[in-house]
Every structure is written in structure tokens, then in C-alpha cells.
Length: 548
Image 1 (cartoon, rainbow, N blue to C red):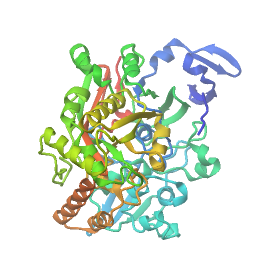
Image 2: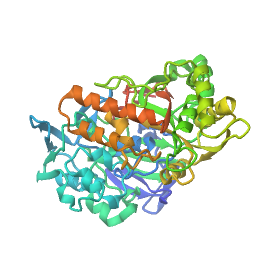
Image 3: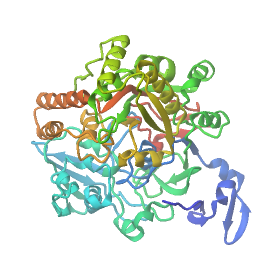
Image 4: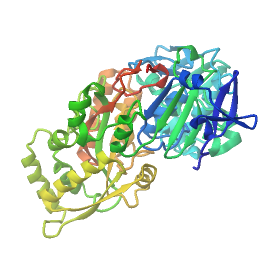
């Protein structure tokens, strides 16, 4: 999708006036005459310059699938529920809700002052339309599975039920929404903070098609309004005058900077161009700790970094080979020598410590690395390869300094243990995601999964056979059945047991090689206030102040 390179809006005398991108440079074109912006006005603006990783894939809430897009969408849109600075759940567009005794019916009361950025009221019907859009196969949402707790959602997403009105959501009146679930889902309210559950403005989507997310077209309902998207340069959002809680928002503007190189991002931060980085280069963490330690922030993160294998084609349709390649990864060396910010070696896919769950680990967790290497070589040879007859594969990752260093380290481990020849292939993030999805040329690939809510289900549902984000091609009917049973189970211990059994099946398949559990690591200027680390790393700009 190609976007406009420079529509901005400039506030003067209470009126938004469209101008060219020259506004960003300090020049406005009002009434056809150029004039310098008054210094007092420029100084009065509170602007947050935020590093945001790679270029966002999409700013369509039902289409978006990456963390970088989600950061912006949390600022520009709002669901029925939202989050406070510490990540705790709070009311969003819904001021209140009730839950039936059996946990199957949720009734939400939408705020009377919840309005769209064009002044239209946000209604219950907006959510009905948006959630139907999320599960409609023609939309192409890769996150439709997040809505599967709703009655008939999975049947609609799979094309088994053609009538969208059968989805378990209806408007009782303009401001009352009723949701019918298939089974009790303890994570449901938390899931509603995900972008797939955000409302979108029907008239805007239908009028502009795919172009509705362009700044000049977008109508949104969050704390900020999108005004500029210059690909590979910056994305700009300004405080919304229509947001119901606008009085609590102190920032005038957020500028998001996509930067694939973590080294370049750190340089921009040190030069004063950024107030906040998305990440830091792993090989400079020691220097950062010694020289800028008070600006370096590390916290636990609900996520797993892993390598996936394409199970649909040779060579990794062989389970022995997959396990060999997983065994040969020395996770202790990676976390002590390569990533070094406190990441923990991973032998599970669900992050240990997730609410109401007991960790399930791969069967080789307690082996020494020497024993793992010996078993890896044995399995490699049983799969038909040897150091004299090596396997040659491609290891694919998206362009990023840290991913490259990890790929180089792991490929050297594979070469050392059993002589495999590994060709590294890096791709721009959007291309990389599409390549993984197609499962045509991928063999081994880098990936990471960040929980969408604090529950084991958010890690396991990724591997359902019909999940749009299952880029390995893992397909196990027993696994699918266990997750289905868990979604209907009202007894918490029984539900946990079903989910643990499902993870055990998944780990045994070695469809992925978990490598480490994430921490967030970033630089933050001392004058950036109002934010808190939280395990989801959902840092909404609406709470932030820049106190220079």
C-alpha cells in the first residue's frame, strides 16, 4: 500500500487547516501565503519522539499483525476495554459491563461521550460491524482466531457458516452491546484490548476501501489522530479533541520513527532526535550500562523468541531433523554472550509464570549441552545426513542487527555440531512476513511471539491448524481438540490440564525451537514521565509527558 508523503494539520485559532509537510519544518502555508510558525507556538507543543522498530505492516485494526503497528493502533484507536500505565485492565469505550453467572454473556454499556474523530457517536453497531469484519474470510485477517471465543466465530472464519449475523454479538440499542461466548473465556476482557477487537468507522471503510487508513481518510476513536505517514521516515499523530478522556492527555503530538537498524536508532537517540528507543543493539549493552545506565530500562516481557521450521516441505518435514536442529542451539551461550540483557533460555513456548498455569518444558531441558549435541548428531545421521554428506539450508530473518547476530551464532553452532551448511537470508519485515506465510521457500526462520493477554491460550492458539499466523504448518488434530475442550471448560484446574497437555504435544513435535524468553530493553530520556514497565509492554502515549 502506498501512502501520502506529507499531509499534516496545523492548529490555528481553533481550526484545523490542511497544509503541506512544510509544517513539520516550521513553515505553514495558510491562505496561500507562507509564513514562519511563531516560536512561542513551537515551544508550547509537547512532542514525544518515539522509536518504533520496523515500518508498520498495516494500521487497519483487523489486518494488523505486528508489534510495531500495535503500538500506534493503541494510541489511535480504543476498544471496549483499555489498560492503565501498569498494564492493568480499565474501562475504555465501555464505561461498564456485566457478566452472566455462567460467564457466557457479556453486556457492555458504551460511553455516551464516546465519539469518532469526525464527531459521529461510537455505537454498539460499530463493534458488531467491526467484529463481523474481523471473522469474515474476505477481510483476510490473520487474527480472526482471537475472536473465536464468540459464538460461531470459528465457523464463520472457516467458511462453514456464511451468515455474519450469526456471530455472537448484537446491538441491543445504540449504546448497549451484548456478546455471547461459546464457552467461558477468563481472558476475554483482556483480549478486547487487542486491535482486532477495536471498532472501525463503517462509512469510512466502505467509502475508501484499502485506502481508508491513509491519514487524509482515517476516522478513529482513540486519544490521538493520525495526520502523517511517510514510509520509512515517520508517522505522526496529534492529540484528539474528540476523545472522551482528552483532558488527561498531555502530549500534543507523537512522532513514531521506524528504524530497522538498532545501531542507527541508538545514534539518533544519543543525538537527541529520539526520546525513546524501541530496542538497543545487543553488542552495545555493556557500554550502555557503563555510560548511560540511568537511561537504560530492562523489564520482563511476555514473549518467546524462537526459530520455526516449515513442516510442509523437506527437509524439516522430518521430525528427527527438527529436534536435531533445536538440540544443537546452545541457549546459555546466546543469553550470556549475545543478547545479554537478562533474557532467559527457553525450553517452553508458553512463558513460565503466565497466570494460572504450570510450565511445560521440552524433554531435553535438564540435559547438558554436550549430551544435547551428541543426541543432535545421532538424529541428524538417522535423518540421512553426516559431516561428509551435509544438509544445506536457508535460515531466514527480518533485517535487524540483533537478529543477524543471533542467526550468525546459531548457524555456527549447527555447523560445529553436525556440519550443516547454513545460508543466511535477510528480508525487509513486510516481505519476510509474507514469505513465512506462503510456506513455499522457507525452511528455518526467525520468529517471536508476544502474548496478546496474560493467559496460556494466547501462546497455544497460534498453533491451531486454521490459525492465520501458523507459519510452520503444524497440524495436529489432538492439539486442536484439546484447545477446543479448554475453551469450553468451566473448571479452572481441568482447563489448565488440557492446555498443558496441548503444549506438551506441540513441544514434542519440535515444530519450533524456543530460544529465549524476552525482556524489553530500551533507552528513555530522563524527561519522559508518566510511563511504567509492564509485562505486556503496552506503553500508551496518552499517559506520557515530556518534561524538558
